[in-house]
Image (tube, rainbow over all chains, first blue to last red; front, side, top):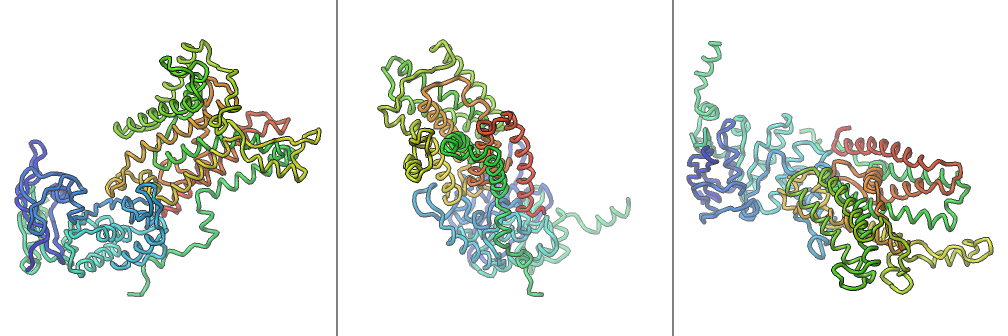
Length: 259
Length: 370
């Protein structure tokens, strides 16, 4: 096995008296989908915000390609190759696909700010990059508001990859989507995985989705890792048990029956 | 797999469908109706040589401030201080021209009066913008505060120094100051010369009647042209749209949201100052009441031009159409003797309401609501 692109070692994050993360470690390898699972409040959001440079960890260390790094801002994280696609996707519905794709990082000639946009070149790149991961948009000048949720997800993913993401953090990309669009997003993830140079951290509530695509799992509960392993090493029931924060399914069935 | 993809479900639009969906489509229709109706009702007087000059004077005034207001609205904010800013900068320039520079620094040239005033108004624009982005308060309320503050300051300064809230009879600086002519002089004289040579543009004695349009028309063309290019062709334009649409998304992608907003508050202040300078140097007068309600006219014109109240969408061409429409209707009373001038406000109210509905419909179509 190659060395992990990103290694998280013993991360602790406290908000005042509240311990959100209590010594979390994980490793993320290029060309793999790493499913990060856990119930609400398990610390998933805090963990990805720490990786994305939004929060600084109270203690613990991040390593990129073996070298220790410290993120003071989201900009630090993105220049280290960590691209985060949040649930709200950070797209603007009223403006065009191209304008969204290059938002804040436009191609222009002339001075910064007042430089003229190279619109046709940007149209072409936006179209090609989205085609690479599976969506052929007929018109890059169409407003993002006209696209489906799955297409918006693809736009955000293609944008993150184009601007140099080596670790793609997808925050519940399949929630709030219809069945067919969920499959589109999973297909998109597999296409990205196939490239081999990008690691995906896939945050989800949905064990079926995670089993369809994940190579490796980490389960969080109450700010701690309660289980981790490669896809082949974990049984279906074990995954389900860990998903529920360690509760036995059989116990739950009994409890439900007793009501 | 059937070979069909999500993209196939979206029809490519025809050119006509595209044009109808554009934000300025409604404004164009209203403008054409207004031009035709006023031309007929005034027996063509509204569009004779003098009519065009007088109409363009007010159209350009509306156009200058509406451009600033529209740019700011596209970035998601309002500026209600525009009217008071006009009054303040007119007072400031006229007072310096009459009473000399502050702190007894001697007489003011038109250039100095304008530059010092512009520094002050840009500072106020910066201050409003900074308060809005730092506090997160609604720009409606912050700029409303400055509406009162600046108007009050204008009146107090007038009474303290000038003992009257008006200044009239300033010397005509246009005679020997090029700088004053840039704001208060005339332009496009050659077009009127050509019209004269062709046998139009005659007064009753058969001499040339009108020599040119007001210089503010040039300012309007420059400001609207620059705004159009910035908005549609430049990186800053993309930042402005992104800021107004979803500012958190813009920020997450590295758009300097706060600087964009503060810069646009300064731009509306600049537009208000140009408006006032054109007025002061044209008429050689100033009045504490100048610019009253102009902020609301500017916002109305921006909305009629297709700018969304919620930001993220709008068109400078639409604002140009809106300014032409509003200017013509505001001036119509001078060419149509039986018309009551208050119909202007009736018109503004009706058109504004219709425009808001039309804009909302466009927004829903774009975001897939229809």
